[in-house]
Image 1 (spheres, one colour):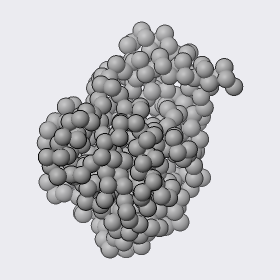
Image 2 (tube, rainbow, N blue to C red):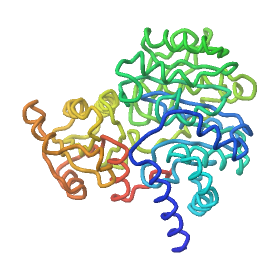
Image 3 (cartoon, one colour):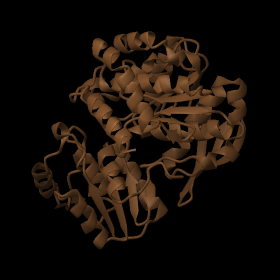
Image 4 (tube, rainbow, N blue to C red):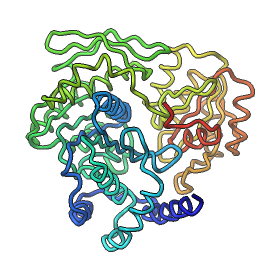
Length: 429
């Protein structure tokens, strides 16, 4: 067992060395890599999901619905919370450490010959694993953007774009329209396109890109389906879904007003794909209760974990926290990567938390770590009360000592590091 774990960690060190902090956008290399591997992605149908906020929830909903219907489902997501293996899952089981080490070792020469990046190699590994496990269907989450993301090598039966927000602007552009245009790059000819953004101007842009790509059918929220009467409580989110004049009352265990819209995107993807997929959509009321998503309004009292890493996401967490009525006093433990809108995140958190502890997550990359001195100085000037505790374990302990609820947020690194230290299993049902 120790030898297997040693091989796993050695293989991961070589894999992570392929990043160097950079992210290469483009499909030429991943296309050649997968061609050399036999194009495994062509052996099963794929549902492809992009978006700034909500794509993880949409993926989790699709996974629960498809597995609930008895299908063997592969799921590829990023990043992970605690263990790299969380990224590649078949029927709820993470890819085994030994399998990861063996695949990376077997294909090391090819990856080096082509100069594959971390994400290109990981995407190829996931698509190969799904083929080897003979999945009935795979759900693939975009890593960054859409048009030039390595996952865009797939030709899906349905592609869905959730809510657009400001993120990764150095790669995707500094306007919502530019970012939406990149996300829309996953729409494909003769594949279902689902438009999930609720703002009219972004919705129109996405619809136009889908139609220009030759997608069919193109399903648009607010036109082809409507979500209303949303109710949020501790048990989840209930909503009315209206399609073609027929209304159904549905409930997802995920908490938050926008979880109703995220669920509706997943349902539209199935409905648009028709056939057996549409039959599964009609069973949504029975299948939705199985939805689970670690790190998104994830409660393990008194702890509340959420990976919100932009201002919109943080505002949503705060709205959900207040809607559910979690007990006060509330302390927030926050660590944000410096290239994110940490000011907007702290301002959002301050609307709910009596106390904010800013800290440094141990796994946050040094090249992207925020400057706690700068954070504290800005907070003083902005009137946002923060307390700086550099040591992560000390920050968690201090927060827990004087709070009825402890919110841990700001990044995947922050939540993952907290889950590991508090021994909360991110994949437990």
